[in-house]
Amino acid sequence: MIAMPVIDQGKCDGCGLCINVCRGDAVAMVGRTVAAVETGNCDWCTDCEAVCRTGAISCSYEIIG
Amino acid sequence: MAVQIESLKSIPYFSGLNPAELEAIRKYVFEKTAARDEVILLEGDTSDALYFVVSGVVKVFKTSAEGKEQIIRIVRPGESFNDVSVFDGAPNPTSAQAMGPVVISGITRNDLQNVLRDYPQVALNVNKVLAGQVRELMALVEDLSFKHVVNRVAKILLENAGNGAGSPPRLTQREMAAMAGTAREIIGRSLKALEQAHAIRLDRNRIMITDRETLREMAMMAPQARGRARPVGSAAGTTRDEGQQL
Image (cartoon, rainbow over all chains, first blue to last red; front, side, top):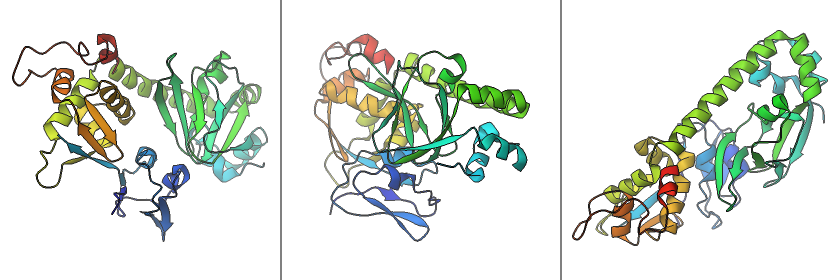
């Protein structure tokens, strides 16, 4: 399963800025908050995390030594 | 495109104005759209309008002669950009690009001067907005000038790298920024610098340490087995100046 941005539904205010900037349609509004959608087009640009003002989106990196 | 009063209300420039005043200002404000990646303002060009984001996100950035980009601000709905040029009339100090489809509103320099003359509250608001932007920029200058962020990011990666057993540790750019005491915008650039130095490789959501010794040098940590740590960049493909700028 491909890794996807993690969205904290409790923090998401549903502003939709992440949907606006996502090139891969990998985030979508589900009800009043946003959810990650596994489209296969997420290139981990992390723009969704960058624009999120509530800190609801986490695009974490595995650090492999 | 007609500008809605509701959209003006959310703009800090126009806060504290009553509905009649907002209605009067509305006639000066125009609205337009920009497609994803569309460059709205180009650094060095002249423009005579102040812009506000209505929906979507705009990134404001500077580009070096080598093509490196440094994001200065991410502008979200209600926030303004091109404030400096509209007040001093000089060329744009930065470029602005739509990160997705955006709707922006704007007001020309001449019209803004009319508004400032007629509504002193707007002038007070402008002071506050510009002071906030100066504060943000001072923090960025501090990060870029005095903090050796790339060194600290190198150290963070070394200290948080998994050894292949179990689930590898995970960190977001925001978390790395908090750990390094810097802005998130600086972390992406630091990771690229480390990649260019062949110390790490970025593979989608993985950061793979490809040369631990180079990474230790960039972290200014003592080498594990041999020799003494060299200054940042001495063997890592970056100059000391580049290390300092990050």
